[in-house]
Amino acid sequence: MHAIGIDIGGTKIAGALVDASGTIIRSDRVPTEATDPREIEDAVVAMIEGLVAGEQVIAAGVAAAGFIDAEQSTVHYAPNINWRNEPFRSKLEARLDLPILIENDANAAGWAEFRFGAGRPFHDMVMLTIGTGVGGAIVAGDRLFRGGFGAAAELGHLRLVPNGLPCGCGAHGCIEQYGSGRALLRIANEYADAGGVGLGLAAARSRKGKLTGKEVGRLILAGDGGALAALRQLGGALGQACASLGAVLDPQVFVFGGGVAAAGDLLLEPIRTAFLEHLPARGYHPEPEFVIAQLVNDAGVVGAADLARHSVTQ
Image (cartoon, rainbow, N blue to C red; front, side, top):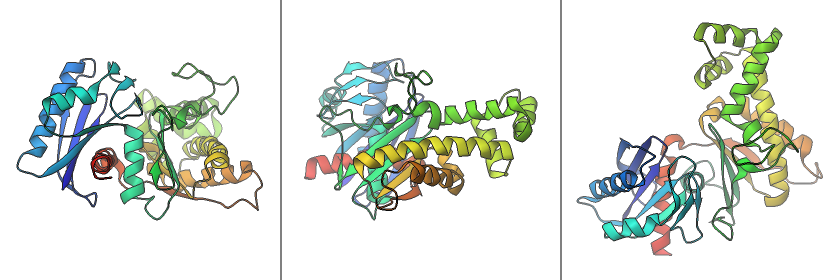
């Protein structure tokens, strides 16, 4: 039996028909207007109907950024979509002859990595998605950890710096302000302003009019000193956060996804170093592995599909 996974972003909806081994049979993608909840509902229904056609499908999972309730039914809040206490599952099930599961997008991506990607050999995993912000997922004892209210694993909002930089969540000093793609751009601009090792970044900024994530990524891979220094600073913040997470969750592996993770070992090296510097009882505490995610852009739809399948077969 196949399942369908849908991943709703701020500007697009991606969907796929996925088999039990996590293989995508066929996929679809459409742009959408995130400010119109009815348009999103119509687009998701149309996509599921198109992917179901002619197939035996057991369930559909829909992933989106935001707080999902413990029943995987209502979206309490979505930062990129105009949803507030949206009963999205009941709306979809009223229009589709199919069981529906609603899931946080980072949870879906993390579950896909656990089941079919970099987390497959392990039982306890933490995943951090390093994109514009920082997303998170926790697997403990082979189970996705959602918390008592369904809103667990918002790891980007772990407090890293007391009275630190203001965050969009309303708090100050969250890891998202020091370990995200947006943070990497801020740090890179600081190096460009300072001169010295940042001269390459300053030259790129002058040529392009501004630094972009793509340009900083290119300079990292080219070995530019300023870009690598910015990445090391970002990795240090993430490693410090991982040490705190490790003290609480004791994962066997940390998996890193998102656009910044394309730097591979250049990102993992400063993360490992900072982790060990801040690890309680270093030398006596078992050390987890640090790896890069494998499924990249397919993780959301594959994870949503697999979670939906599990919800009706367990």
